[in-house]
Image 1 (spheres, rainbow, N blue to C red):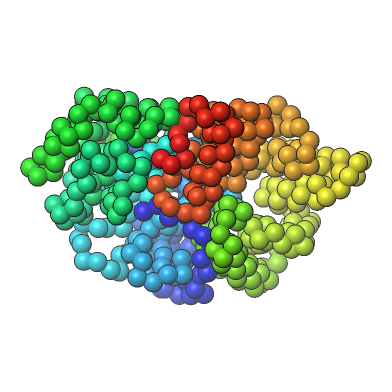
Image 2 (tube, one colour):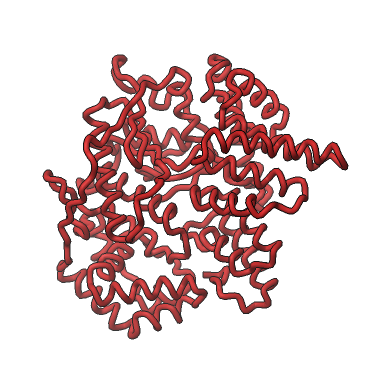
Length: 510
């Protein structure tokens, strides 16, 4: 599943002490990934090669170019028990997840699954499934029905890899066999209704996606269907215009499920070798803070409208900040510890701590991009409380830090966001370069909700209603219920009304 965390508190023993004392945590670099693992270079290389081949497969299938990739951090832990401790839950059934925060997108994957008994439900399947979620969100975030979001991830996740590197694209999702034989929602209902109660997205989602992807005529219809949804058509209109007779489509797919006849395409994606381009040992502070790094969540608390839920999540974040403070005190000069501490303080609006930590980090390393960005955002926030020349001067100081961070790392999206905020937070009209930079930042890190919501409001101020609704659609139409989705749907309704009700973006109810 794709799991967007809400700031769970992490058990102190997570990962640490679960492997032999001789094991060393390292980060291994590949073209599209950073593998954090204590399994050793051979295992990390094997994992990276598998992920790179699946990345290439999805690029071949979608036509997405391989330029300037945003690397995904992959945290490989011992077992699903470690994942549950990371989330502060028990008996959840969660075997891995994908999320994103200000440090970038990441996956958490186990080497061992502790529950179940299904021999087909493997850690590698989970990893491939979660990376498919990242690929969809990173390269073509848009409006998708829930069955397709999970169906696409299951299609990639279930595709088997042969010893020679070939991938059997479209291989049966054997882990979903029981679901497919006992549970089915007629497509005349599933493709028409906005919400289908108790629908299982995984098994049937895989069957529909596999059939529509592998059949040439139906694949063309699938592309039309998705285009119609993103052009603002209702579920019913998009489905009937693209597929025609939905009863016939339902019968065709059900027939394939019952016959067990599936088209499988052997594909051998070629990747550059050696797959690993370098590695380094994690510093003691990085190892100590691995649990907190995975637990860190910076989705805007303001998007949670329910007061009780918002306070619950704020309490969890405060507890996480306290843990980070305790550990960071042991590593007072470590840039990673200071960066994580500043970010954790910022998400609960602890201005004094942000001020203290960013000063400390920049005193140690004046070119620290993370500290420059956070300091810039802090100064912009300060400036909005000032007036006249003092406000202008403080905003200019914030802007200068954002420019410095951008020059230090032109590929980092966050300095572009900080540059835009040096106008936006103080009520100054953003320059064209600032708006272009914000758009670029969202395109680079599309799953950072805060940046996306700021872009929505920039478009709304300019009365670019279609652009605002398109930017908001991935949040408003998320297949996973969340406080962020509820808030986004409320905002979508306001945008539709402001546009006169004739907007060509998805209704907030779909």
